Image (cartoon, rainbow, N blue to C red; front, side):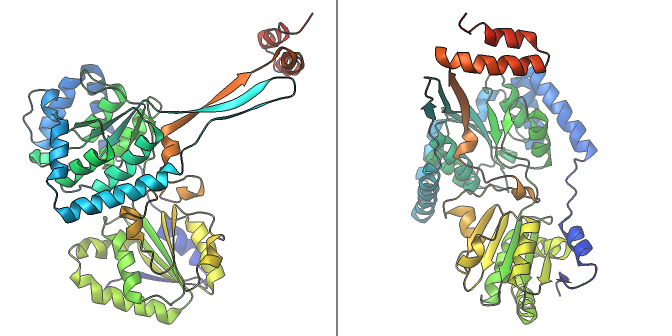
Length: 433
């Protein structure tokens, strides 16, 4: 029996139950924090030598130099060429769809000219160099390579540096093939906080990047948080989440498996079903019991469902949508017979999967939109990773002589009011005497 929580929105203490369910303590462990601080300092001070030492220690390698930890382009191509036809076709299809979607996001500069000849606008330029962190060893995700690298390349990033640990020398062919397909420029087989430090500070061999993106363990997340400001980062993501909003019309086996699809990530992942039909919730729970024994990762799924999962009964779909907006989930499935009417009522979600045939897993791999999404309620103010994360905007200001007469007066008055006389004089020097 899977002891997944059953909640009812009509219960007097429902608000507190929901708050407890959603609570996640993401604070850094002190030991992790202190370890990361030390690693960052060492890499900043000693560069390549420190990275090699930490890599050999943590990944059980015996590299003599950073040169031994960089993969030649030919090895990436060989990994792609060595894939089975089925796997290569799947990877290429996913890459093509991801690229097509993100090409729609490319932003262009713009400008306008005022009556007095003053011209204002915005210039959009790509980042010069980006670092992509990819988990390695057992947790190897070629989809993560595609989702991070392709938008960067579409944005026009000039150089993409990928770091991926290879514990015990274990390389994942799909990850290397994805890097080749996505146009990654250089690949280093390093990981952990030392890899983030190398990207953020630069070493004799690893060039300093402008931004670090990609998922990682607690040490990687802590390192990204600590180097933010020296370089940009995409986000510090929490555990994966799915919220399924159902009306009882979808096969309950489908919904149960969709809940499993997030729960199998790790024990802290969160899977929630919200539905106004109590009998249907019973059917989904029966499906969970029936299907769980067939899952290779059943113990991880069970722990996730029992610790952070929930089946929530609500009064109607209006209340279900209100709850969904309150949760602001990473992934939201509208598993409804007529979902279109409800889409515009959703204000907070990383991605919305519309209709019973749209499983969240399609978004993870090949639908096209990015699978790097805001977690832990941050969809209230954050967006999916996209091309815009690899472009920056620069304001353009060209004031005409006539414009300087008007703006100079305005700026002078405001600068006087702020007690900044040099600002005022700078503006007034341009006034015609």
